[in-house]
Image (cartoon, rainbow, N blue to C red; front, side, top):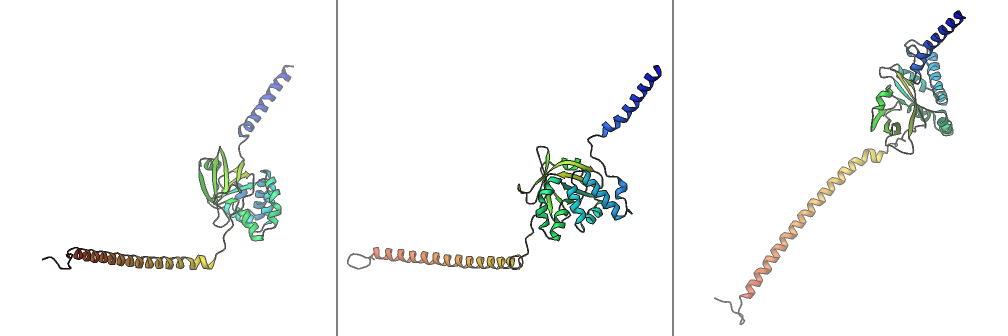
Length: 260
């Protein structure tokens, strides 16, 4: 019996030792293994690692769109291997499922641009973006588009620039927080601000026409001031002449003779 009791106590101690590390790291965001992004890895391995990472984080539908859209996955992997790293704002499956019909109505370039809009050109750690108490502008992988990060009541709110309450998302979960890759789960799909098509008249000729109009306005204003000054001088001369005539008339006696 004593041997059985001793074995039971030893088993309990071993079990406690195994549970302590698990409890210590429970709730912390997982770190992406460095070997997954190491140089020399085949593209298939990197693609599978990124897809698995996003799928396990709750955004498998977004990962599927990235895998099916040409060029997006390659851009993500190249940015991960850069010195700055990559941040992925990954919409959850519910948000992507509601947006899929609209996504399929976009052109190929628009689809790629929308997916790249959810990637930032730096691995922003949770500690870094949590220090922002007002507006913070960050660059996305979609050309020169920017996102605004705003903290409200302890939650990070993402919106395009200029900010719009009709197109914003909130970070709900930290999936990965690593030196080269940060992944955050968001509750909505972010839509890039529609870029205005260049207008030849207003973009190129407009500024010159405005300058010419300004110069013409100054020219007319100058002539108006000169004409007004001339009118004032004439009015003063006329008033002076009338006053002189009035004084002369007042000195004339009733018989029409001037006083000596």
